Image (cartoon, rainbow, N blue to C red):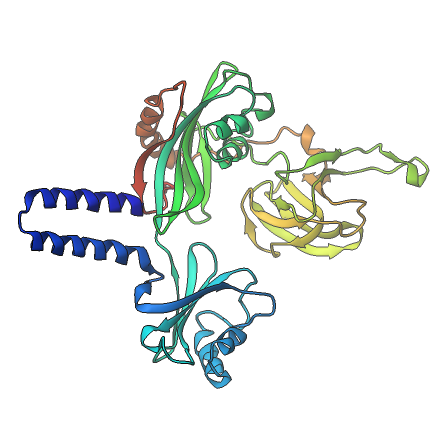
Length: 439
């Protein structure tokens, strides 16, 4: 993004110099433009870093806010005062995480002093959010978010072997494959059985921080997939702004997903099915019913809620180990056993796909896996043998608005043509979150 600005400024400079005869005026404009470009390069965290000496580092094991400042010639009475004044904004004394970057700013006029003292501590919580603690004169602490830009793009592809290979050959993010396979078409297309010649179009947004740091695919606005002779449209739409529920719907407003995900882990394998007649050698081949469905996955693999619902248990008990139980409605309840740790609390509302814990081996477990249990009307059943309901449809009050909303998006999709040498085309740059919310 900065490169575009630099090119624009350069073009303006060339045009200006071509029209001016006065050499001194030319030099003045060249100097002004150069200073503008240089200043833009060093503006960060709301500070013009050209006005400071600065140090960048990351939090090391054993580092604390006090230790970092003490290393840089700030005494403990001052450190305590800074931490106390800042803790209402950010508890800097306890929340620093190993590996996170930080920056110290020093006044330039103190550059020749034998004992330099910082005036500002900046801690980056993630790529977007940072904490500033300024103690040059008075002590101020605040949190901010870097400017975020969303760039809308389009892509197309024709399947030869699989979608991952198609995206890789075109230099596109594999996140697009996950979103299409897991979020959009999970119940309508089996991506393990794509055929050569199947093809897709997608409108999506890439996320950039500070105009220049690529932060990945943000969302898929719409998609079109040709598979087994069917043409499958999908449009993203927020149906509940309070619970922030976003679904994908067809061109006639039909929800594309089921109420339940097929499995609670993205990267795992079915290792043991629901089986009421199971016999185990360890118990002398006696019948030991298995009322769960096991998915083997490495320790630490995220476990997802398979449907929207309310957490009714998040605890540890006997052979179940650490587990979470979710009531989805009056008919369905699910349970997730042997977790390494839970990520939700009793009474919490969760959405389909939310991470509720991580795969572990707590309780009676011979290896890392999640035992997924499924209740229907109070009885444990095999989830793979249930005719599960579709997800909640668009309400009648929103349907008309939805159909009107997708008209230009469908036209945009239809006007994207498949090419032998497909490429990404930037469409629009938007600074707000592009997920549509119509009330």
